[in-house]
Image 1 (cartoon, helix red, strand yellow):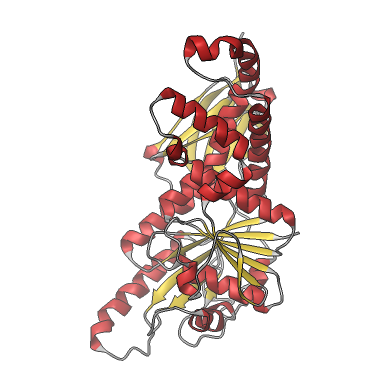
Image 2: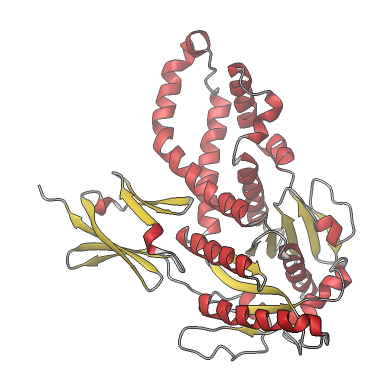
Length: 414
């Protein structure tokens, strides 16, 4: 079974270089590896100093690189459904046919579907995904669940409505109903969305790894990123702190920066105590070209650095300084298990636990619909489907403690 590793973080923290270093190490271990970019501002070609086309291309032995063009994927792999959407939008007179790809979330969705397709092909043993900055990555990862939720609610009604309205829709409503081929493609898309959700949240298959730097604003965004990823139940299994000034930088100008970075590193270890933390030095040259990127492999991923390159597991109740030398391939094939959302029976009814590390309880809001409980935090919200047994239960109270949101359901009185 293959593995998928998704790298995310604030823009400019070095995600591409860190993802590329992992991919190079994997390839040099003899694993057939793919490095994918979903960021529209692709730079894998710049890193490997090679022009990349619209399909995966070999950049090193055992390593292919792929800068996904979602427009190309939509046109090539989803022609029927895109043809229908194009005609629907162009008939409305609101948007030109060429602008279909501008529908919010469409490019993200088809990028993920392409990655899933490649994974299921079995061609690669490891897939490393260089994502866009934090906000876009969160939108990318939550979009399949959101769209699938809407399709699940609307699709059965939609199929009946299409059969009834199709004869008169073009004349009366000026809207063309999807033909059988398009409807079949929409149904296939729904099934693919379900498979995609399962793939992204399968902790035996997919890991999310966060790249950050020891700077206050970046750390605060990293904390929110980690919290949101856990809210949507993704498996975050590593944190990479990039651009740490080496002790060998013998210049008074850097003394204050080194002191500040040490304070922020201590803060990072407190905030992310459940994760392995990798420290990457600030290099004296641009990490451009495979040979330069290999410095991260040599100094950090192989655990040989005298300056940084340390991994500290910092698990609760344990010494943060243990396991200084650690080969990152140990983490490739294992998981750091954080709590998943769980329903369990309690004396008064049922309790739902959602792991939300670093959340501000004053900002958490929730409400219940007939089929879901909706958790809202900041600009993000998530619909957690309720098991059938809880459809006659209502939320009676909730509390946030120990990085976990506890929601209690009690049976409605008749």
